Image (tube, rainbow, N blue to C red; front, top):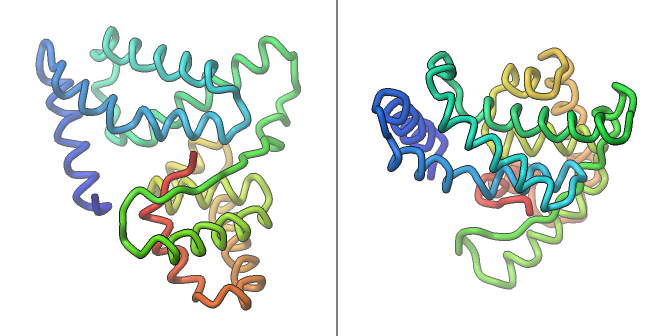
Length: 205
């Protein structure tokens, strides 16, 4: 689903859910659309799968019960990712008594798998390995902002709000990440621009 079309479809279902007394069909669509990405995001932040499932489950239960409180939520993607992130970090802080600097040192490990047969299997495997190797060279925060920017197609402002940093910091992280990827990409045989475009057809697990 292309970025523009995706946002239009999601916005339509979200408005339908908020406007109708039941809205279960719209709610079901939204849940199915986001659940895997939210789980993957939580796991990438370093949390175990069961904790991530609990976080996502609780979030959607809250949405279903308290939807009247969400009438001002215009960017659903940003809201969901921020809510899951905050929920997980609150759990971590509660049980580990960690410092506020924890969110700056999260591992954010990624693995990539194809979701569309855009290229043949051999080329897909090579590109998968290339992208994974390149992303491993970045800092955890650079990986996270590039994931949110290119995979979730989020605006810099939304990423800044989600991660609790200012917009200029997000732009610098993306810029430095891309600059570094470009500097180490000479041997990949594929332009960095092509790799970044291909990222929009991949999901992190």
